Length: 210
Image (cartoon, rainbow, N blue to C red):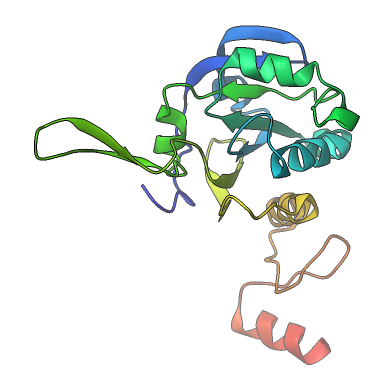
């Protein structure tokens, strides 16, 4: 599927842990359509090293995201029981206790496959036996989905490379600015800076003043 920007985000129904403790069997992005933007992010594995730093970083900014009508949803290929277990372990012991946004269990790998972030792949050998190449875990994919269910931004990092949550916030601010003001966001734009009109005169005026 590759680049999803400009396309409808693949929907799914899967088990998830919500509110840091409750396992639900039918979590879906449908609940946010027409109401909230969503940052859907994938991470490789529970009980690892870079992943908890990212999950806690999103939690630290959760109220700010929520204040901008954005919901945060995490996904990995671990089970919902694994998510729940990791949530019971304190931060100082490498756990993710205190994370309250939904953590989805992509145990059949279909969500990661549909978002094209699955690191491994399956194939059949010459004896028609199913084989796997690489680990069936997710790259560090991030997708900003608008209220209409359209992907407006995506970023995929390799497994060792942690994401910048402030950059995810900047993308939220940029999309909100465009939707509210009708102006586009130039290079290195951040909240509080000028946008510009998407015309030749607008670009010329912006460049002349910067």
